[in-house]
Length: 493
Image 1 (cartoon, one colour):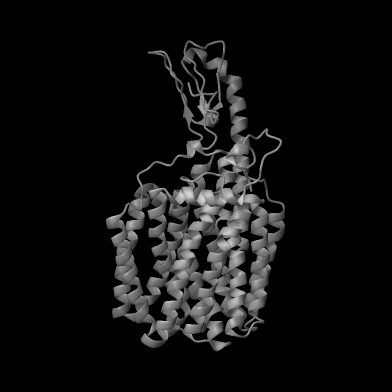
Image 2: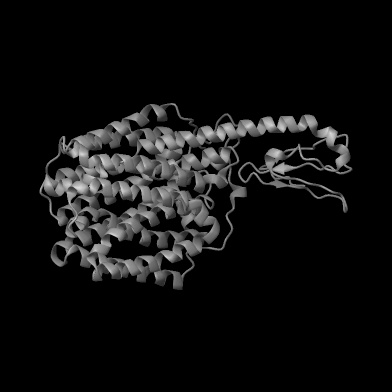
């Protein structure tokens, strides 16, 4: 019989019939899967899902015994479903408020046509964003672990709204460098914290396995909303270049009351994890550093992060220079809004398949198949520059599918305490690599041509990632150890 404190007793079902054919059933608070204790040989024992524990019939002669128990179990099922639905819908709504659909289709071309920036200056500005993200990731992840996660996300929304307004005021390259550094802080406040918040809310309700699907569908909702926004961006520019940015600021402001009323709690260290302890200690800087050190010491995390960092760098380089690339193949700026709307719709469809891809292909095969896709695309744009357009679609779709799979893989292997810090550390490595890529590609593109540089960059990164797979084990076979993950009574922050 399991004696671990992490298991909740879900039985015995009936003292009147035990020990003839009924045994206690146990449910883990994170996995939600029941475990049947040792039973006498020949005894027929059935123990199904946690919400059905206590209502299934064990031997037909005891069916009447469980009538009342079944009704109570169904009530529990209904309560759990309602709580899960509320969590999911709140996260969907939050994701919509961080949409950048009005901003995205015109942000880079605005710097080119209105401010007169070259590709090297654009690379500098957007590279500065990545560097600032690196510097902000650990502090903001720490804030997410120490304070209420919704409060961290709230700060992020305030900063995003401020950035959008500032975009229409700043004029010099250095001014935009500072503005993007400020925006990076807002972005960092939600990069690891949002996923940690969702995962812990689901884990509290025994639905942690639904993380990939819920996050993927939330991304689909967000991308669908952004598609409508993007399609309107070109139209809004007709009323003034500043209008799309101000509209996007308003969207971010809408998220403020949503986050103010969101569930919140304060994670504690393992030593103080006892929910009844009156003097629970808050998550400390020392614990944050230890969480990073312990997590990255594991080969199934360290090499995985190295691999996904390479893929992320390629995505960021391609993504940043989309608008100059579209102009280089003759697409008019007026059509960017509709094209970006199509980007969002394709990405939304891809996001909806994230859970299916993970279940059918697995992490290893999914990430490995990305390499030939990028390799072929890199060769294609060198031969036919217009192939940039399908590459941009493919790049966004790949990113949308891989993100929740990556976060599920990592969430399954790290503890609740320090989760946001570790996820922020992973984002930090990706952004640092992306910053270097933006600086280099931006500088070379003015000399060698954007298409040539993008093609060469893609091939170099694909070869490097393939070499990493060959000489290391980036996709560890080690099973996730979620049974050891502490779940606080109110892990909603």
